[in-house]
Length: 295
Length: 127
Figure 1 (cartoon, chains in turn green, red):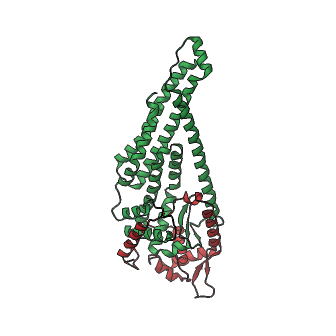
Figure 2: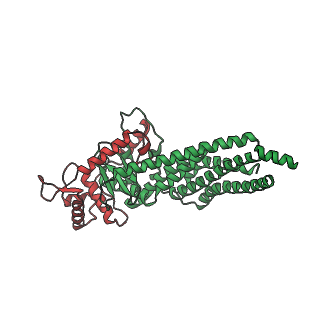
Figure 3: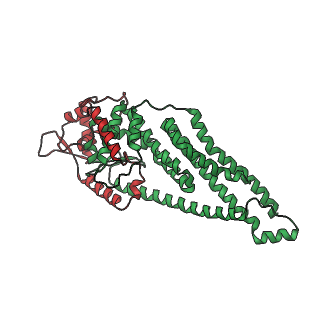
């Protein structure tokens, strides 16, 4: 219990550190899946570890202490009280962050549904007559693709096919669910924020690779990305925010597709399973402790 | 490279996907297009009849209109719904970074150096 209970925190940190490297080495689909699964497991384990630490406060509760004194028992004290109180505080913050993330997701869904209102059921493409170049997938049943007229006008015919194939891949592989899951994991455990960033990038890469395959040409796919990025980017915009994502995606399309390395994917998953095991072990220890205290 | 259209690796496109492509083609230009022009734009691997059928389906849904004052047989995209969608989109964008920023957009921001790199890529490929 003394050590086990902290392993989820350490392993989350490790997962966050390796995630960008995994994103570079591995094909985007298995990398995104393995990282998301590991992040969800690690976040669950960390949260549970915080619950366990908080529960040790029970051993220090006045009635329990008085009871034990009467019986002449010495209470085991697995963690210092200050750690348990800190765990309770962290748990409260995590709960608030998860709630906020869930609300944000709901708000996004509502907004998106409104954008596609009134379109017949069998329509995949929803065009917005707008001078702003924008394109995104709208998840749902049926999923839709929203593109502005400015974006369509900027692209060449083959590049428009790339754009549609890219957004279709987001819908077909339910990328919004993956991203939502890893977002919740990072909300519960902020140490996992880099994993979220990596997965968000990887689903774009995944959709790029899918589009390249559908159109049958990596070069055209890279061009479509470059042109879309240039037209979507307003030069007058004072904020030159960039996470280098587009240039990295373009560069990735100029070399051959990355390999599906199973051992790496398995190692990443292990980083999620280990904290879960640590948390489970700590649970057993705490249950034993509590049993001795409460009975 | 300009003007050549790479063919897909024989990936079959569903009727819904073809509808999207025809609609995207009509939206990409200010002019009304005939089925033959759309066929050329889509890479020529579609039969003329297929294009015609898709146009009729889009017309039934009210998403495209027959060009009334222009050439016979030419089509334009219907603007009404698209304008309403654009209004709703801008409304959502203006309300704050939250709803749309959370989405996976096709592309995100660029730094000046990246902008230059992308421009040179497009120049190199002669496009």
